Amino acid sequence: MAARCSLVVLIALLVGCGLGWLLLHVLAPGGWTLAKLVMLTAFIGTAPWTGLCAANALIGFIILMVSRDPVRAVCPLPMRPPRVLGRTAIVVTIRNEDMRRVMPPLRRLLTGLDLLGAGNAFGLFILSDTPAALAADEERAVAVFAAQDRDPSRICYRRRSTNTDFKAGNIMEFLDHRADGFEFMLALDADSEMSAEAVLHLLATIQAEPRLAIVQHLTVGLPASSAFPRLFQFGMRAGMRTWATGQAWWQGDEGPYWGHNAIVRIAPFRAHCRLPALPDGRPILSHDQIEAAVLRGAGWGVRVLPEEDGSREANPPALPEFLRRELRWLAGNMQYWHLLRLPGLRPMGRWQLIQAILLFAGTPLYLLFLLAAATAAATDPVSPFPSNWVLALSLAWPGALYSPKLLGYAEVMLMPAKLTRYGGPARFALGAGVEFAFALLMDAISAVAKTAALLRLALGAPAPWKPQNRNDRGVGWLEAARLLWLQTLFGVVVFAGFAQAGWEAVLWTAPFAGGLLLAIPFCVVTANARISRWMRDHGIAAIPEELDHAQTHVAVPVAALLTQEQAD
Image (cartoon, rainbow, N blue to C red; front, side, top):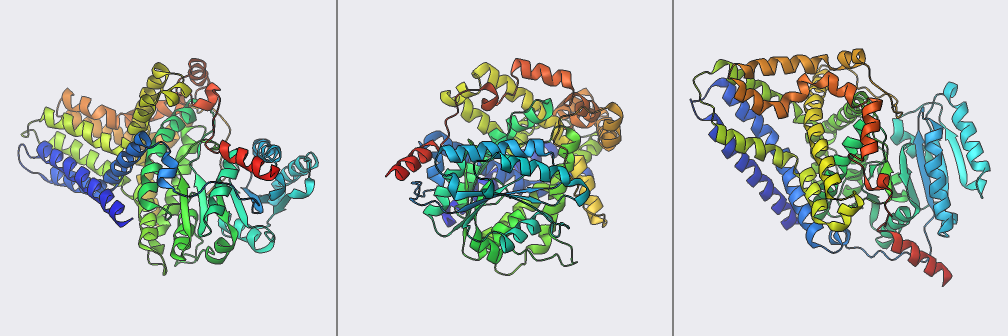
């Protein structure tokens, strides 16, 4: 793996140096000023993440295009199902959830396992951290669910009186007191949905390699009715496929863990994943990456299978919920600073924590670059505007930063079978174009929210960690204005600066900072029921599952082989 890691570093360095060379040609005319030096410094700070995006995307794209079986190319493990399935606990963690949403996917999963003759190897555990005053409905829902099952004894509901250590503590309490007789755990969130074939595929993979502690699929979005999640998940799906394939190629069995839709080997997880408190005594909020790092340090493998079919989750229904989720993740990832020196971690484990930090820590530098550029435009009338170099940089920098998504779109366009699943070239190209415009607008909005959150954390404000709303809803203008006034103000300041340099500078800036001025209407429009209905009716940004094409899971041969093994 050392050679593969070196190649990733080389690609990232070449991308960073190439973009830096373009930036120097943009900034050099007219001499150097303080604002230009700030722009250069901010760019250098963002270069590692941009280079990593390009490296993962390029490697993943090549593998997806040239390999007959990309999953086996990055995970060369035998996939033949074992004769005896390891006993597996399906573990669902909930807190203040709508059980009408939680239970149907679990029914489909259990029914699918029963149809494949594997149901007896699984038990279902609903682990609740819901306060007692709100728990009666969920307890009744589980009781009704169990009564309708062919084997009610395989379904268990447990509620803790206090949610000590949050989700990580909820799972560890289960493993300590209720996991006897189970070898594996299928970890699911309240909004998770997995097919029986995908679960058996994960189980076959982890049983094929005794030193694996965690195996998980990519998790894609469930078909969404609202405009915001359908656009978000359309782009996220394309980007994650190339990113995860490239990353799995050079990280091997030292991959990340995303905390759900994964098979976990119980014994090593229980032995090694009792998370330490932070230096100030607070519990760790974001548990998954440190759990993976600790397991790798103890000699256990963690793998991601970069395939999509059969593993899904719901995405936030509107921008306010999306930003709240992002800020929860930000607060959790920033805590990893305190864990980088944890004894026993391998270099790749520490890198995983650094990568999780970089996902958010570099965001203020993008805003600093934008603000410095606006300042330079407003205060430096001497420097000429090098249009050709600005054009090159304006294409190359976002091209590298968004390369996982862009190459993911290119892969679909070049694969007739995949393109058919998305409804053909015209429908897919329209969805990709609308989504990319959506991403440019949203990322500017998100950058301000993340920067403000980082400042609050630095000043000692408590991290937000509240229950999630998963239901579609509209967003009113007043709510959007209260949430996004800072983005709007920042946008006014930035565009006022660029306006001093003339209309050409404003036009160049609009794609990358326009989301700031449009933040409030963007929030309202992407949650609007009429616009959402129009997008659904016209199939814009529709995913294959929504188009109701026949789904062919990579794991289907596993089910067939399992049936054959049992018949033997």
